[in-house]
Length: 176
Image 1 (cartoon, rainbow, N blue to C red):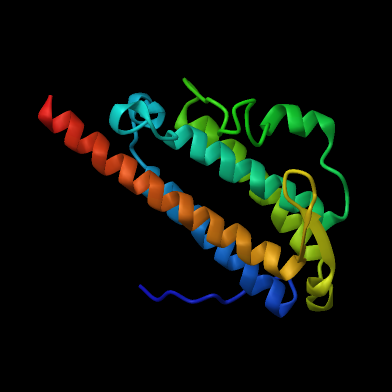
Image 2 (cartoon, rainbow, N blue to C red):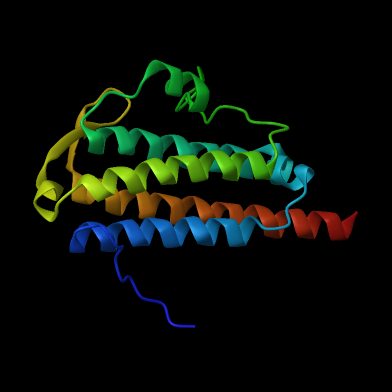
C-alpha cells in the first residue's frame, strides 16, 4: 500500500495536502477503533483513572468542530456547542461520555469532517496565513495553516491514548 498526501480535488494545493492529513487520520481512527464493544468504548483504563475512548473521540470531534468555525471566520453556534461540547467540565477534565455507541460517535465525527471539507474547498493557499484565535479563552493565536496541521496532530496524539486503552482492556479481559 502506498501512502502519500496527494491533496484533494477542488482544493488548493497546500490546503488539500493538509486536509488529506486530517482525512487520513480520521480513517486511521476508524481502523483502530473497529470492533470495539460498548464496554471497551466506555473503558477508562487502569483503576478507572483515564479518559475513555468515547471521551477522546468526542474531544477530537469538538476540537475539530471549533477549528472548522475558526476557518470559516464565524463563531461556533450555540446549538453546536450544546450538541458537541463542552470542551471541559467543571473540574477541568474531559466531560464524561458513557453509553454512546462507537457508531454514533464516528457518525457525528464524520459530519464534522464533511463540514471541514466544505470549508477547505473555500480556502486558498493564501488564506492559510490568516490569523485566528483559539484556546479556552481565545488567548492564543495561530494561522489557519497551523490549525489544519494541529487537527491532524491532535487526532494522532489521542489515537495513541486509544491504542493504550485497547492494550489495557485486552490485558484486563484476558486476566479475568
